[in-house]
Length: 112
Image (cartoon, rainbow, N blue to C red; front, side):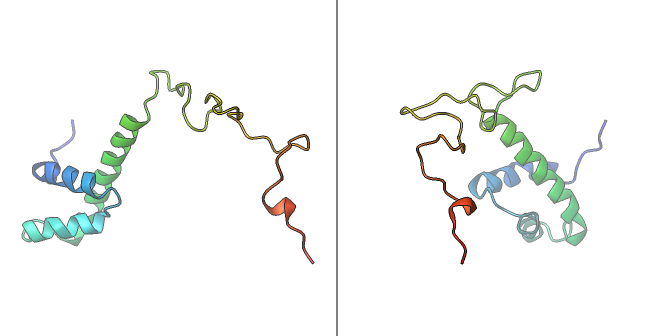
């Protein structure tokens, strides 16, 4: 069993801050905590704030990108190649020579 974190009483505030500003850094979060409780928080707590933010972001990502119990991606999950085609386009990209689309990228750039 894990020991209670000194951040537990502030968890609701931190979650609210993170929801309002998803790119909020651990240092900025710690700065807000220092403003509220300077006697309790300071630079030594930076690591625990980093760990908490990492955990909260991971939990949020798991909520947004659901997976099955076996860890297999669901149909249409980005990066799996199982997405359905739309508007007559293939769901996977094709860079072969038979494609009727022009090649874009370093292979189409002519160098002098």
